[in-house]
Amino acid sequence: MSSDIITIGSATMDVFVECDDANIVSVRKKDSCSDFMSYPYGSKIEITDFASQVGGGGVNTATNFANLGFKTGAIFKVGDDIYSNGIFEFFKHTDVKLSSVIQDKDDSTGFSIILTSFEGDRTVLAHRGANAHIKKSEIDFDAIKKAKLLYIAPLNGDSNKVLDDIVKFARENETYVCFNAGTTGIKKGFNYLKKILEYAQIVVLNKEEASMATGIKLRPDTKDVKFSNMLVHPDLKSMFHKLKVCDYQIIVITDGGAGAYAYDGKNYYYCPCFDSPVTSTLGAGDAFASTFCAALYKFNANIEKSLVAASINSAGVVSEFGATAGLLTFDEILDKMKQCPDFSCQIEQE
Figure (cartoon, rainbow, N blue to C red):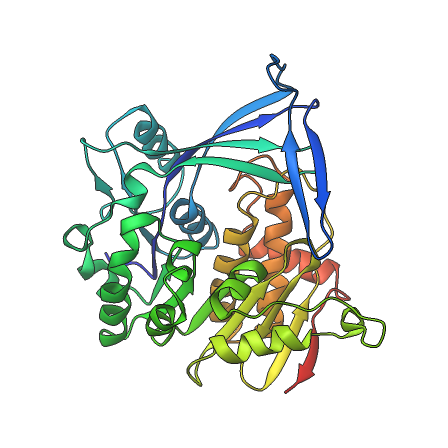
């Protein structure tokens, strides 16, 4: 049985650690500011809360698509260890097909330690393991051929070498592509990235990734120009124009707690964050991007409604402890849209 959607990305066992003794230290320079999570050096610190969850972009998005009612398959690579056992056990409670999953007994399953702050943000200590070693010969191309949409979550390390082949194959077989670019691929330069972008109908990046990919930085407010009063920063528009390499593409740039933007060549869209308590931001980006893709299908390519749906579902994720714990069904998203009719996007014409 073929899938409506197949995802490719990472799979990890995530260990969440929350500690009330963690400090957030801000270091400011003349033209920049950096925040650091810190603990007393050389001390034994008591953990406030602890939990283990399955995560990774491939896992999170496949789980979300299935939860939203799509026949979903997943491609990711794991080892043969206690962590892979935990990942397979997790999927017993979902409708995701695992026949295309790659398992290598000589490799280790991805593992992450997530240090969560009292503000809900997090620092991730990641061991990529098998996630960084996906080979072309291991990919189930037949599953991609039969799917309506291929969702590409960020790939790690050498796994990026398969990107060219899978996006080209998807295009040749009329499988739509949503590309959620990761920093490993972006660091190869825009000329490399452009080849991948040309095959993708939907492209999703966060603001930092978009800046890195395009080489464009957002200028701060000056005495004469208040960029913060504009719906869409002019430099953000420049990023959109550079990233949109084909007419048929929709480009999305997310901006964390500030919301998300989209561009279709005619209009710019801005959607604020849906109001919710923040427990952990891990998985919010995966939920947003995959829900946006799913909603475009459900809402007949209505970008405005799709951004709203994506914001509502990602708000559910940040309100729970874990990357998939707060995911909503489509009926639950629609209910919240009806309950909050004033929550909407702002649109600016090109």
